Image (cartoon, rainbow, N blue to C red; front, side, top):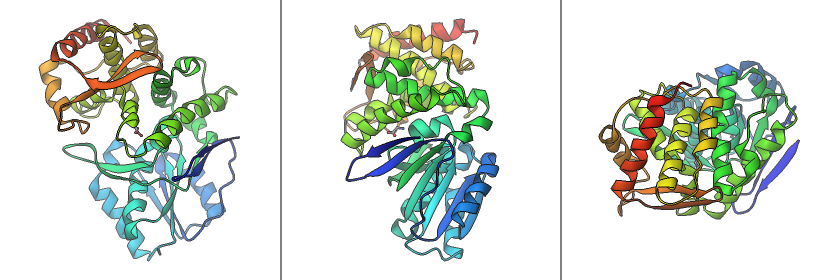
Length: 344
Ligand code: GLY
């Protein structure tokens, strides 16, 4: 088992391992779990004896205001008190949603994240971002509300479809580009149950913890975690959310790599192309720059001073800066050529 610590003021442990012991609840527990991991939820329920157990269908479609309202009303009907704890067991949509319900119920109760996908373990459940989507865009409503602990139970990955396992590791690869950690850029032999998995996940989480400790509220360095995400969000929206988040980010990373190259940086396209093939990402939606520009302009990272892009000049040299339209178009055209020739 690996135990990592997030430093004060938002201090809490992040545990990664198999057969994790749940902590002593500090009050009545509301267990909110993803239907996909029901056996694990039932096991946890035996240990934690929750006051309330709520089953959700995971997936992006659940991460909306109506489901958030249902959760809050269930909490209220059960008269959960201020010292209650929400235990969120599931992928990133469930930890985001239940974490946001915890952030706002009675103006905030404690919560524990039990991420059950690679994506949630290395990214969504670490760093205290919680929230829901609006029809107008992803993650437009939410709160920074760090959990009391993150429990990444590796047994959850045994039943995760291989495609989802690999797709989630795109975010770990992204952390490797940000930190210049070569080990994170080579997930090729990883699979559930492999001994290399726990140290790999721990390295990825360590990068995220470092960034979040230095910039919890995303006023500067944390924006680097959006590497590849501006185009990714546009691709997800253009595909009607048929394109999985990790696959969209992998395509977004290719665009970022081409943009870095266009701006004089190192050529990082080869490892990203290998990542796309390894994750078996489907081809992205078709469309030209003009089709995506509308989505991109609505991206929530659009600040009043203009849109800033996260540009990788080299692994370990990632900068957040405005980029001229001509360079964006050139990188997009090169990206579109790769997408057109892509056979998976
Ligand atoms: N997933 C990006 C962040 O936590 O800031």
